[in-house]
Image 1 (cartoon, one colour):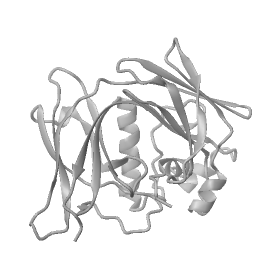
Image 2: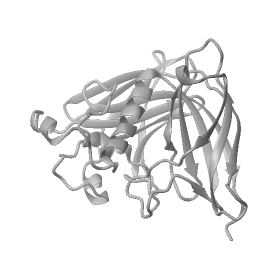
Image 3: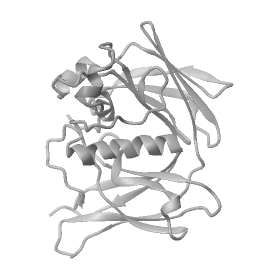
Image 4: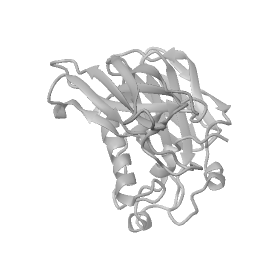
Length: 282
């Protein structure tokens, strides 16, 4: 089974044991949901996993929520998401839309009804910023590994927050946030941006984490524009990995969230994608 970056496992255990002991024993609803410009909403849903429990693919499946009613609305139109079994993911279930496509500038409301609980959130989709180029570069021609370098122009006199994600074809079912790929344009020295992309961390991966890509990879590189609440969430998610040195063991700082009645993230994204071909694997 292909491995998927199961972000909401980390959310579910992102409190320290001391923090957890002060909370109710009732599990929380954990949300990872998004809607991109030009695409439909997707939501991953689970119940939180106690800190003392084992975090593995079997236990994760026991906490997946498959029978919730999830409604997405733009204030005028709405749709109820359907759920499908996608065996390329862990967990292998995703709620998805088919009629309400993301439009830049619009707000999107999320409502989750499960048993006696209601979980809500709201987000908006920022205007997309186009990638100018993405290129696979190796230090020497003899190397079999390399990094991706991207270029884009940050619009002048606009406030933007970015996230860079990648997906390796036939290896990863979804886009993975690049390591240190969350960007605030306040830190840019000039509007023309050129930077190296480090491959993101996959949970439950069979192989040891490496920050580079390899010959033979077909790499999808996506530049997302995002809102401040999404930036805060993803920065706190990254801090959990850096501080704990493992994405499945939490540090003392809880993740940021914009979910009312639950935990996690509901985010709107602008997006621009480029496919990068690498040399054939010898």
